[in-house]
Amino acid sequence: MFFLLCYGGVNLSCFLLDLLDAPSWRPRWKFHHWSFSLAGALLCLVIMFLISWTFTITSLVLASLIYYYVSIRGKAGDWGDGFKSAYFQLALRSLRSLGGNQVHPKNWYPIPLIFCKPWGILPPDVPCHPKLADFANCMRKKGRGMSIFVSILEGNYRDKAEEARQASRLLTKYIDYKNCEGVSEVIIAKNISQGFRGIVQTMGLANLKPNIVCMRYPEIWREGSANNIPDSFVSIINDCAIANKAVVIVKGLDEWPNEYQKQYGTIDLYWIVRDGGLMLLLSQLLRARDSFENCKIQVFCIAEEDMEAEELKADVKKFLYDLRMQAEVIVVTMKSWEAHRQDSEAEMAVREDAMDAFSKSRKRIAAHAEYLRSSNVHKNVQYNEQQVDKFLYTTLKLNNIILRYSRMAAVVLVSLPPPPPQHPSYFYMEYVDLLVDGIPRLLMVRGYTRDVITIFT
Image (cartoon, rainbow, N blue to C red; front, side, top):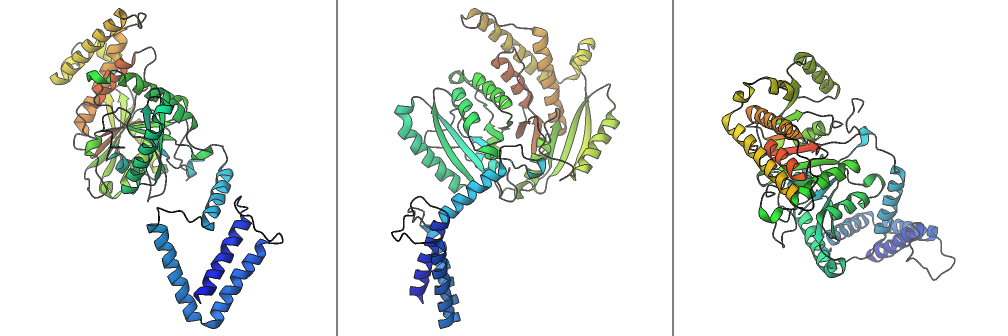
């Protein structure tokens, strides 16, 4: 019985290799055809059932269990089975059928590019932040999807090629340990900005390219050893905008829950700019995870004082109803910068510690602008105090609103402001730092020019 089973398996392997035109398949008999192997496999199966159908079923079950055990436990060796060729051909056909055109929002899947060690704040033997894979799993619905974990080594390719291979193997072990569906890539570049620019252009194939870049917020950017972080941070955001990729920046990654830590409260969305519905989609993906399934979604719309708040609230409710998304809509009014300048008492309405942070940020920006002017590299830097105050005021007011309404939220999602043109990267880091100050767990989201959700799903 087992002899016939082995002989049938050999015929089945020959059938697959011949049918799939594997380059390594070179039979000695020049008259061989795949139909002969298929006929041999079927003949073996028929003879097995003619001998005894009970022993045949028992043999097939045992053979299946052995194959499953070898495929799970025998990762150290590759036996070169014919099914690998079938998977390869199926993947090629699927990739060609996807084509290079844009995917319809009904078929859009997040393919996150996880930036593992962008700021060099982890030990050399730690390939990725322990909670970053937990966050990547939150972007998959019921385990469907793929993540690409990327790390960049600074240096020369010839000198660090072996180190990159070891880092890639370590990162792969980390992905397997965290049960995350993904692949690892480690590249070598002169610096973080050049390495990421190469990644964002070449990573992926056709419609299987990553569409969301996820990374940790650089909370250490003020330290003396992190002088290049502001330039790298702004460069990455601008490169993502040019490559039409979304950006998700995680603040408070150390407190991010795993799948066993239940969260209660709300998932608060501060919807400020059009992002193609990415923020709404991320909130739904978070709720699909066991850790956030008990949370409710609140959508905060920021409006100026002279806008029709009730009309805006009704429009957003109608939009969410058409999308079949359940969320509470809250409209919050915020005084514009022009109105703030005309109102002399507006500054007194802001809490004292917030105004202290505002004054300190303004002083640091002024000091940095003076430093850039005194240096030989940035002599032509333009420091517009009124524009700086406008950006600082806007981020400060938004931070006050978030702390007022979402202090106890499980997670807060807010639109990531784009880097203002002609502003040095240090200025932008001050704006963002003032926005995220005091918020324990925050996702800053920047979508792109296309929609990822539709009412016609």
